[in-house]
Length: 210
Image 1 (tube, helix red, strand yellow):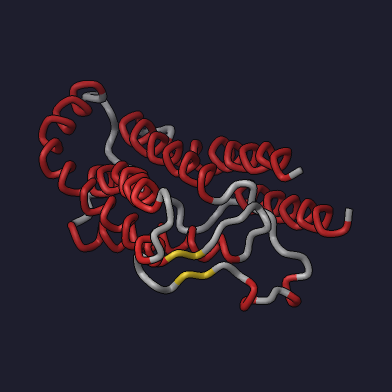
Image 2: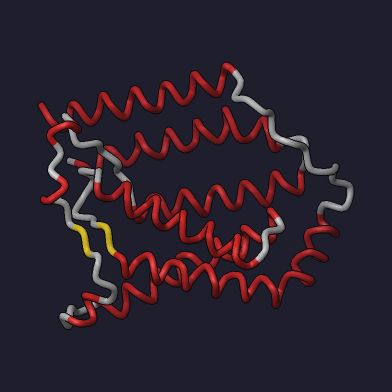
């Protein structure tokens, strides 16, 4: 049944992009291309890690003790679970693009880029605890492998940054300077966020009671 809810998440991500992000980025072709690429990448990560995202209703009755939480690093390896190495490697590979794009687009230093990779991974792991979207869990090993992926991505960024910068500058040589984001969300963006939250709550209720 959950597979039919993927479309709602994808529609929300598309609505968020075209209504909120695209208007902010479209005046600068260079950053429109780079940030849109980063957004598409993040959407793919969310698709494989969180979707469909369904909140446990009622949340007040959510039992944390019943959640699948692993706080022991490399526990799957220690218990000899099959596929542990494959999952570890895939988690590293998944975060390599993040480690490349964040410093390239936002000009972040090593520690900041690694911190962003860790926070991104931690956010996904925490959201997995509160989702009925599947048999997902909070896993410390995933945090470690994702962070390693971010570090590997940053190393690749250092190697290929001059070449990538040259290519991007040639393609978007007439691009304007970067524009600052508005300090506050406009009315349209608030409406979009409201729609996303409402539909998430509605379908979570439907999954619980229907």
